[in-house]
Length: 350
Image (tube, rainbow, N blue to C red):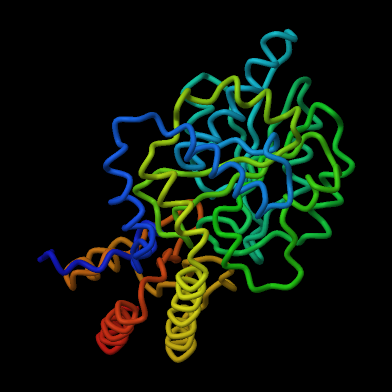
């Protein structure tokens, strides 16, 4: 039976909670809540641009990075309509669904290319073939690290692929979990934007994960100034709320909190991986704030049993079967999860 003590390990939220500095910033902003947040929004753009080593004209704030994803889809659809061309969105499968959902809502075809079966990596050649066989504009949505697998795409292969793409192929790189990456081979698409490697790259990032501000709805896109100008035509006017802006600014300045946020995620990952190793349950190398791991048994039954122990875990992500996505909560939460998981093994359930 679920209680108020539910441990939520199903939505990739940061259960560490907002930093004290962010909470205080929101409280302090209440006295000016009747004002439009133009100054705070401008300050956040300046801060984000500096962190990413780009100009302010290369940043577009979103109400969560989900809005930035939407603007890319809408902008390219409009571009195709004006030019009298077709437009499609190509996504690996499974992956984060927002690009697909936005495209579907405006009748843009979405082509799903299954992940490679041996290691669940993106099938870059398969996605490229879909674009090559299409007479029109193609948008590749690439979540890197990918959700739900928590793995990264080979940087050399990805950069080479982007570099040889024709002008009608666009790349939306969703780096919501990039701050968690430990693999030294990883390179952000932001670096390619700084290098002016391609005009057809948009990188989106969020304050929902490491910064623990999912409820504040703050994200952003990084691209060339020309691309950002095109995207801004489709962004909601005054889309950044005061509380979100000041909370994001305060969090970015709170280096101790950001370090703690990353450290606790790493501690939780180590605890879970150690347990999965002991139980002989396969898991993919996590470069995010969650782990995609094997369940020896029916996944829905496993989810229901975890729920009976007041633990909410992720759903199954078809077409992959036999795996569950587990959010890395606080170490104390993961200790409870580990205890329950071990009890399931004793009962022969996993």
